Length: 67
Image (cartoon, rainbow, N blue to C red):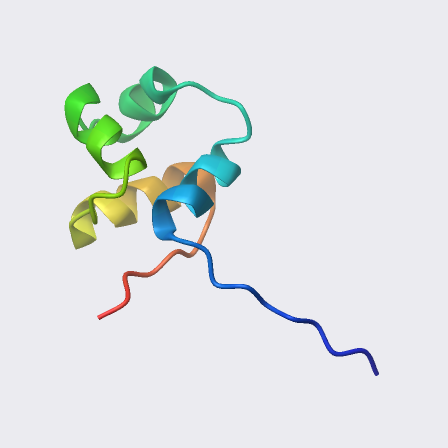
C-alpha cells in the first residue's frame, strides 16, 4: 500500500488545471457566467454555489468551496 500525499491547492488553480489549456472565453460560453466574473474567479474570488455548480458540470469535476 502506498501513501499518497494530497496537496490542497486553491480552488482557482484547480479550475485552471481542469480547463487544460482552454481559454477563459470558452468557460464563459459553456457556463453562461460573464467574462469579467470568470476572470475574477480564476484570480481567486470564490464563486457562488450556482457558479461552481456550472463550472463543475462543464469541466466534469466535483470541486467544493471550503467553509
